[in-house]
Length: 227
Image (tube, rainbow, N blue to C red; front, side, top):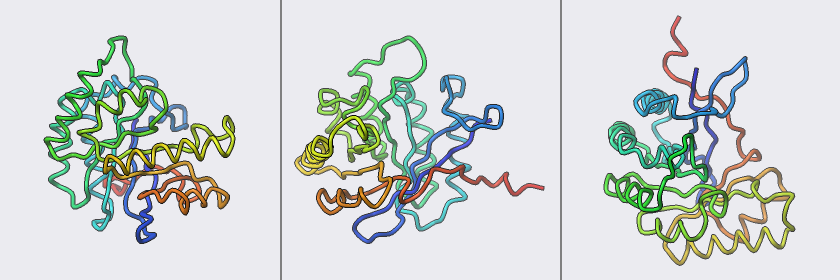
């Protein structure tokens, strides 16, 4: 069984809950885990679950973002199906392109990613580049996707414990400045405690996430209420 899990997003403009990041988890032996192979679940199955989840969420949310790996991102059917969901919700439905290549052996080319980003842009579905500076989401790719992207998200947890505080600050500053220069929104995730809060004061992200603000949890769908 698969379900959407979600983590709260908070706006730093008004210090309020503004939305959720949603991602797929699979139940295996009473544990909820990242699916080993997302290709086992076709776009219709995944977006049907997403729609069932979105329909139970508060109407006053501003943003609902949904993770896609590279292989999912370039599959045109996702854009078509997500465009339908977008028209059924008051929140802004966004796609987060993760740093993961995805299941399979076929290489996803930069040209395919640019074409897909343009497709989402034309469908008025904003694209966030998740975990910038990590995995496949490096600066060379990001610069090519930039015309069709609305947000950069940097993850403190990806470098925590491996880099010094000054190195962490340098990276956050780089991505914040790039977002400002390119007129993108900037999200900062990975807040784990009060010691991380100065990052908000010093770099003024538009959106923040992290265990300090909200732990990921299984989202509700209408079928949960069936007797």
